[in-house]
Amino acid sequence: MRLTRFAALALTGLLAAPLAPAAAAPGPGSPTAGDPYYPGYGNGGYDVRHYAIDLAYDVPSGHLAGDTTVRARASRGLSRFNLDLELRPRRAWVDGVPASWSRQGREVTVVPVEPLRRGQVFDVRLTYAGVPGDKGRGYLGGWTETRDGGFAAGEPEAATLWFPSNDHPVDKARYDVRVTTDATKDVVSNGTLVSREDLGDGLATSHWRTRDPMTTYLATVAIGDYEIREGTSPGGTPYVFAINEHLGRAVRTSATRSVARTPDIIDFYSRIFGAYPFETSGGIVVRPPIGFALENQTRPIYPGQFFTYGRNVGVIAHELAHQWFGDSVSLRRWHDTWLNEGFATWSASLWAAHDGGAGLTRQFRRNVRLMDRTDGWRTKVEPAPRGDIFDGAVYRRGGLTLQALRNRVGATTQERILRTWATRHRYGHGTTAAFVRLAERVSGADLGPFFRAWLHTPREPAHTRANGFPRSMR
Ligand code: TRP
Ligand code: ZN
Image (cartoon, rainbow, N blue to C red; front, side, top):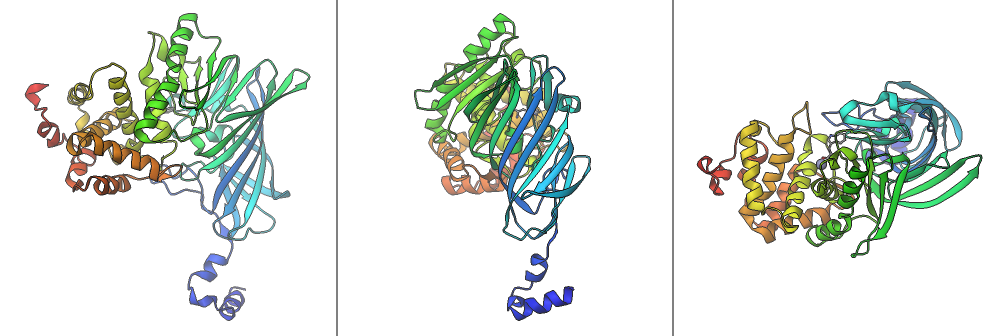
């Protein structure tokens, strides 16, 4: 069989490309996207273009029934391929033809009746069901069930609790999310509300669409009792805010006042980093004290607990900076987290300085002192610690790196570097090496030793002293 195929290919002249016979033979898609820190995440052999996610959510029980169609392009001939999902599959189809499937942990393997050709665009449809809220990962998030509904928020993963996917940021796609639930409930997702249809019998279907490419962990849906506010920023970007109605009055007031700064903040960042990358913006304030906020694309999620002591615009400025750094320009590998978190930390400082807070230099000094006090210099920024890619030192030292870069090349050039980064990699990906190269190209400076000291060395860079912050001054 093999020989025959080989001979046939030789006759058609394909032998000129020595790898062609092997590449043309359909084989299994990889069960991993190849991330060294998270080998279980994502898959290989195809590229997702679109997710059509249909959910039926029962609020009292937290039971979710899903029917999702993933449109993808095979990047090689595929005899089978994997999707990531932690709920129980019921049935599978490939291009409308029933397909067999099996599941091991979060890996669902789908076997189409006919192998897929390299380059073929195909639809894989999966029905599945379960109670996602009983599989959450605590402080890492996932699906949080609430008395009034539930919501998806988690990093570096959350998607496996509500839809089958290629669950790694390397594979971006567009989304249509339809949720059918109790007609008295609000449903908010990423992007734009296309329609809301009353089905009778106390049920309604809401349909949201995400036009711009989005990674899986940034997809969200929130179901519950929300106060919805809509409008358009002075710069022309529409927004949707959703504030959970079961939060206490004082928290609701301070949360509402904080998220209300969103239009100003994105217009401000647009002037520095280039146009806001997405069609719409906003935010969702949820009731459970989940302990984190998350930069879900176009619609970050904030827990009410962040507004217990009054307004908190810092967290809003942080999550909105991620719309450029993390959401539009995404990680290729999870150990590059500083490209998200360091950038968002520094950007929030820039907003604070603009908004009447301490200047960048004062904030820089304060953070240098905090690094001293927390022994943070022992942590390398990149690669981020294997056990905790969200280590506080990655945020703080990552942010300091961008301020040190500003001190080194000047404010205008540093901002040009960030703007070029956001523009050149818009809707794509970035790596630390690519950022260093770009910073050198834009500034014309040799920044190798600088970035080595700031990012890759487990002790304090001499530059903090060179920049005028000797230990005696702290
Ligand atoms: N990226 C989030 C932020 O800085 C924080 C975060 C880290 C997070 N780990 C998480 C959010 C786990 C949700 C779940 O804004
Ligand atoms: Zn962040």
